[in-house]
Image 1 (cartoon, rainbow, N blue to C red):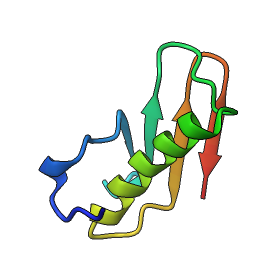
Image 2: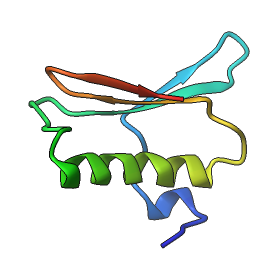
Image 3: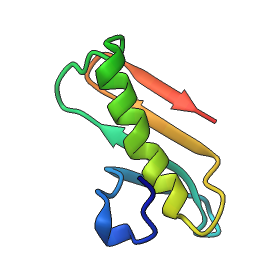
Length: 75
């Protein structure tokens, strides 16, 4: 399913801007250990970030998944 409206999806927890105000990273953050090794959990988290990247009208070079034990950065 592809969405074209930001209101139709959850927004990322963190959006990082560069000095020019351009988005350079979006992140999904969990306050509890999120088992990224479990295929279903990892797939769901990645799909949420992909949805955010798809609706952006510009290139966002980095995405990040964070929990209390792991930080995964994707380019």
